[in-house]
Length: 232
Image 1 (cartoon, rainbow, N blue to C red):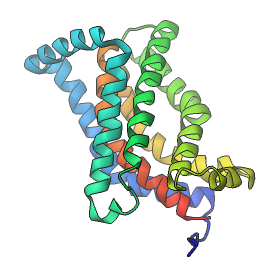
Image 2 (image 1 turned 135 degrees about the vertical axis):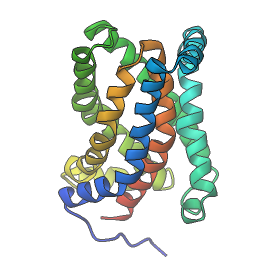
Image 3 (image 1 turned 90 degrees about the vertical axis):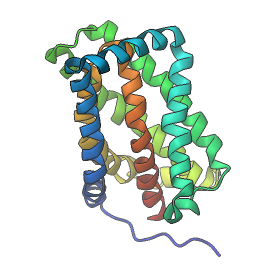
Image 4 (image 1 turned 180 degrees about the horizontal axis):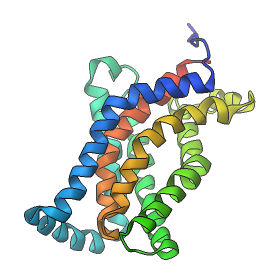
């Protein structure tokens, strides 16, 4: 029996719904990011531990980036979704490969983004530098690149790894307004403060913090796009 899509929402209505749904988990994610930054600068044992992580991260290079994001952004979120009764049926085991590969690439991609921004804006952790990086991240990288291809690939995953449904939706018109703008409401609400915390750390620690933050975000993003893809 074919799946019947739920009625479509206006982009702003869907965006506000996403933002409200993300409020509690998003605040928790932001609190963890703030705590990590404060602990690094004001808690000597944490500072010493993270300095050791810095050395390991620098030796690991892009392999560290890919593996870390694959675990925290892909494997762990998939297991959470798979082992939670309410979401298990929508996340069969074959999707594990998608989660792992998608987020492994995201780790390399975000590593490249952070390195490029350090070249363009500088590696200092001053507020002017942090602000420039946040604006480039949230007003250029995310809305013009990361969100569109992420939403499209998740739609492909939710369609059973068949391109017909997401491509038909793409050709239906106003795709960006219908699919990307609602996501960006949630992205901005969570990630504007979170990436400020990320960019407040030294370059070598930015990706490890972002990977931990992505563990919760990947779960929320999967649920948000799944809800979108059930609607017209």
